Image 1: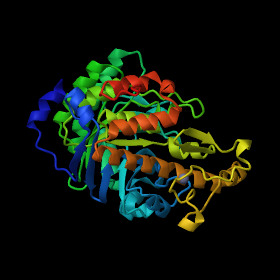
Image 2: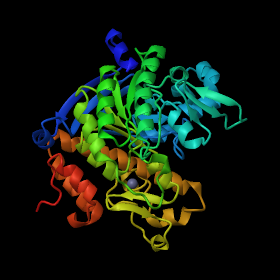
Image 3: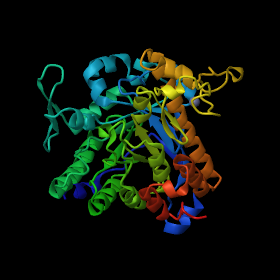
Length: 428
Ligand SMILES: [Zn+2]
């Protein structure tokens, strides 16, 4: 592979982050002889962030329903912006003029941007991928456009995000075409080399590579080794979520855990590992056990707009009439601004109020968005505390027992994935 030859000649890439590994789960370490669950702190240009972390998705430089101030109040220290959308509007010239996305949205904490490639392939039916880049027709006026690795990095340089992602060749993970999958994986490596060469500000923006290879363990292994050799400041694992395509009301939450396990087993210990597009609570708890550090998903904010509240025992739809006279908080004991009693400085919002607002007033969706994002962020805090105190297996058992009501109802993919790292959910 041509890409392989160039890596030795490449000079070491500067990094704009430091990664402090603070604790490893002794149980998962003991069982598989490699670090799995871990807690760390990632120091980025706009402040330190605790890992493992969930990153809310603010597609258009705005988290739907929340102001930047509210997002900061919830405790968010790193959110996502979308390169494809920002590149279309306000566009690169305006971003350059205003001095980047932090200024544009009044956000002084960290931002991660995707490459824009995923949106093209998932949103635009006419996208066509060649070695040069992704060709597509502008959704505005239908003119032919081309997103290359160089163009994606140039856009992300103008956005000024703290973490930028390489352009990768994205195909549907479940594609049966192994040749195409192999081609996409190898092309993603070549595109990473082009992204590294095009990156203008490595001393203030951290470029992450993306491991591809679909559901083929051999391709994933090869890609992990090649990507790790490029020595980017952080490493992402792509193509593991149905992400945007997952059905809102009939979610099938099965992430291919063997892919996560295989990749993390081959990656250097001293770099953050980001699993793209994965963000259901159960997926996060399992993936952390398998050695992942960073997650993002549109689900918590999107599902809020359908009246769904995330709770420790699963998702609850507050549009249901049974909540019309339910005067308890969304989640008992939740410390978010909505659920917290007025006496404790919160809003004291009840399920009945959300039911009353649902479908009529957008404020109902805003309140649920705050609760849901807070729920994910505080779940991450609990995960991190459990790892730091070396009681992650007990935390995981408690989490799944509460979510499914009893150990016998926990899905088999969860039981198997956790068994692989020495956490037995069915133990008495
Ligand atoms: Zn709450």
